Length: 270
Image 1 (tube, rainbow, N blue to C red):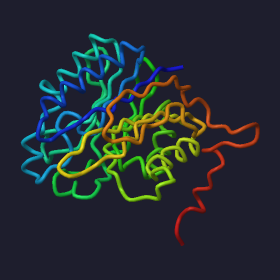
Image 2: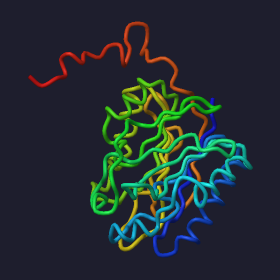
Image 3: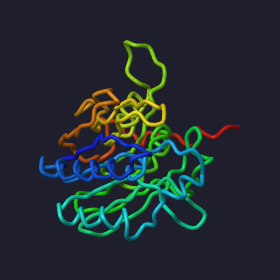
């Protein structure tokens, strides 16, 4: 079992230093609670609602030193595997990225492929499959927010041997029936169950430039059921913690297998 924590912290693009201090404090609190894999939201170092590409570029930092260096040091100090979203400065960017850190080292960087809403005006999309990296806790796959809504993205991670999927997100609060959960949460549960892999979602809190958020941080087990339910309150920060069983084999009972039963030869349009 792996104890995981999703840190739902307030982000504010107009007060990033305060928000960043809160994010680092949340990582410390999660580690003190026994979490060995800790996840921060999408764009945790800057906030999300950029007005332009130039503003995103001004907030972006490279994958060494600065924001990532501070996270690397924290991962070593607390002895955790840490995943966090940030605005990455790199040639061709900026990118909406997430970094995986362990023992003070960068293990990998993932650049968001499926850009949502106004993001194409601020960021360059990534061009690589989901990141799957070896850690001392197992193989961790990373995707960001809207990426998680494409089931084949999770399938690719599963086929590449991922033990757990982590998703830094900023889920905007959209209209829905008052008596029903958000589709983003249902998709995460359905996809986890479909491919028999746990999913850790780190959403955010705090109204930002007129945008409200779901507050959907959660931990979903490999059977698709919630191990730690979200608050569904985008104004409430907090830490969602659970013990997850790694993905393991892909069988469902003695006769079925979620990957082995696929018929990709029939999934191609004629």
